[in-house]
Amino acid sequence: MFSNAAAQVKLTASDITLCRKYFEPVLFAKNEIIEEEGHIPKYLYYVVSGFIRLFHYNEAGDEVTTHLNCPPGFITSYSHFNSQTKAAENVECITECELLRITKADLDTICEQSSVFKDYSILVFQMALAYNENRARELASLTAEQRYTKLIDNYPAIIHHVPLQYIASFLGMKPESLSRIRRKITKDN
Image: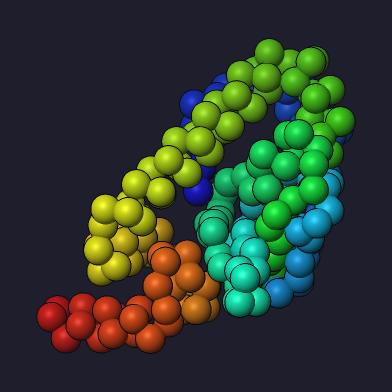
């Protein structure tokens, strides 16, 4: 959910050439897991279209959605991609997805060859950190209804493309609680 970063960067013709050289366009099917926990993430993905989530399994074996990505924006298990260590999360396409992907080695190369990409990579990483800090604060301080309302206000398309159980998990609640909140909001409006 870091789409604002692209608006802050001005690409030159040579930067665009680097993009075309190093970012590979790919299509993935709905429900396809494109990176698995326990493996080193191979790619950083830029979501052109479609919806993706990061999730892991808790001790009870239940899926816990930790991130939902609405296009456009980058997604991967960031810290594990950067450090090239085994990820603790899966990356799954919720819908059919059109993506651009780049390996860590190619990302490092592109950043060495372009100060714009180096600065952009730093900006995306900073935005990811800020997003995660804000998300943790919201999970701790906002009510379930406030979290849902804020998500829908900021990303209205999510409700039409992402199953409710993933949204509920992302918001830190059970699907039944989300259903009650949705009924209450509909009744109040």
